[in-house]
Structure formats: C-alpha cells, structure tokens
Image (tube, rainbow over all chains, first blue to last red; front, side):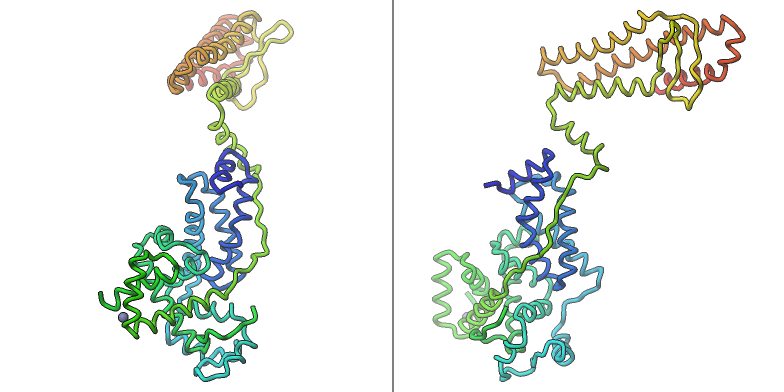
Length: 200
Length: 221
Ligand SMILES: [Zn+2]
C-alpha cells in the first residue's frame, strides 16, 4: 500500500505521477469539504483545483510528511475563506433565515413556518442535501467548519483543533453550539423528525 | 459540575472520544437531569440527520504534468538529489561551459589563430600572427580537464571533505586559469600592436573592446 508519505517522497524526487495518485486519493474528500463549506458546486470545483495546484507548488515545503491531509485541508479552508471574503458572502443570521423562509418558498417549495406541516410532502419535493446545505449556511462559519470536519471527515477533535489552530475545548464547544443551532433551523423547517426519509 | 460543564462531554460521547470515567459521569448526570437529557437527544438526532447527507463525486479528474517551462528549476532541483561526485562533475562541466561563453574564445584554423571575445556583440574574427602555438592551447585545454579530474579524484580519496571548500578551490583554480588565458591573449595583443600598424587600425575597435573586457574582468575580480 502506497501511503501518503511514500507518495510525497516520490513526488519530491521528481515523480509527478505520485502527486496525481495523491490527487486521486484526496480529491473526493477535499471536494466535498469545500462544497459543504461554500455551498456551490462550480465554485467548489474551482477552489478544489486551486487547492491542488497550491499543494503541487508547495508540497516540497511540507516538513512533516505524516501531516499531509491536515495540511491539505488547511489549504482548502484558507482558499474557501478567501473566496468568502472576495464574494462578500455572509452567513445567514436568524433574520435572514426568516427572510429565506418567506421569500424563497417558490424556489424550494418548502413550507417552513410551522412544525405541523405535512413533513412527507417535504420529503417528496426536496433533496435532503440541498436542505442541509441551506441549513449549514445559516450557522456561523467557525461552527460550520467544525461540523463539516467532524461529521463528514471523521476527524478527531484534536485533529480539528490542530487544523484550525484553536484549543480542543473551543472546538468541542463550537461543535455543540453548531449542532444546537442546526437543530433549531431544522426544527423551524420541520426537518427535525428522525423518522423522515429522503430520496438522495 | 454544573449542566454547562456536561456539554463538552456530550460531544465526546457523541463521537466516541470519551473515557469510561467521563462516560459514567455523563450518564449519571443525564439520569437525573431532564434538561440535559433532552438536549443531548436533540443533538444526537441532528447529528444523525447530518449523517444522511452523503458525499458526491467531483466528476473532475485533475492531472498534473511536468511543465517544460520549469525545466531550469527542475535542473537545479534534481541537482540537489544527485550524489556529490556527480554534482561536482556537472558543476565543473557547467563551469567550463560558462568559461567558454564568457571568456575569450581562441580558435586555431589554417595554421593561424583567431580570437574573439564572446561577450562582445559581433566583430569579425581577426586573424592574428602566430603568437601562440597549437601546443599551448592543447595544454590549456588539457590543464582544464586535468583540473576537473584532479578534483574528482581528490574527492574520491578524501570523501569527507567539505563541499564548500571544494568549490572554492575549484573556482580559484578556474579563475587562475582564466587569468592565464587572458595573459596569453594580451601578449598576443601587444605583439600585434608593436607589429603592423595597418593591422592595428583594422582591429582597433576589437582591441579596444578587448582591453575594456580585460579591465571589466579585473574590476569584477
Ligand atoms: Zn443538566
């Protein structure tokens, strides 16, 4: 089994194909990380490409070859943050969520106001991924990134703390408040019932 | 412990990063505290919901290839990877190549010498009198090669020697060699000057440049 360390050594001694193997290994997780963070497929592809180009150019500077994936996630995260700044995206505040509830009904065919809506209708009309993406965009960035890393990339709290350069208890606390905030949003949208089934 | 203090433990437990003692403490609290129990239940449900959102394929295979534009950088990069004797040999070859580029070139053709300082733009090759012999030049060339060979031999014999010292010695030798070359040339120039004034007129500009070149080299040193 060629591990990342081996491939990095190979690449550093001039084997470009080794880098491609790293790309093929990591492009799916990195893409999904960026996608959930940024919420836009095309933009996510664009950032993923930038991420690997950046990695390609600076891999020789990576000292600890065992820490390739945290390093790669860090590059992806920085690019995402730059993009958010550039595009002046902001996370939705609670009032925005309310606006979204009222204005975007036609787009998403969601009746979001009350909990007593027929939830199965939602299931038929909506794609769960789209709804969760929307929900994720409503919570603060610092909580969103922790939730993505924990839920979808199976990182340990220590690893997340390492990438985000924050104390581990801060990370756990962000996770807690992030989940709590997501729960509130999903509840508003009538998506908090565990028995709902969605077509993916 | 207050209720707030159990939040972090809930996170530890939710993602199986909890120690057995902490788990026991958390469970004890949850048994007695309805608020925390309900909160933990909703957080767990939310995490469960998030889990249903699956990864998708990027459908985009990135492939990296070597860029020809960076070949120069690659050369230096690969130079680092080579073994020291190889590196020395390549540097020596490069040094000789540079010498041929930047120093005066001496050619022997049809029994006559011609010289040309490659730094100057053009200037036709001026035939000079037979001031040096073919043997002199061959000696020079042989000396150059011998010098490189000696350095490599030296390295093989004393492979503990510092690279930096090695290179310094090498460049000193090269510089000595270069000065020697120039000396041979300027002798030639002098003889031309004292020889035919007509030829001097013809070659005036080139000689001027040559002297300028010599001065430049000396100043550079
Ligand atoms: Zn409690």
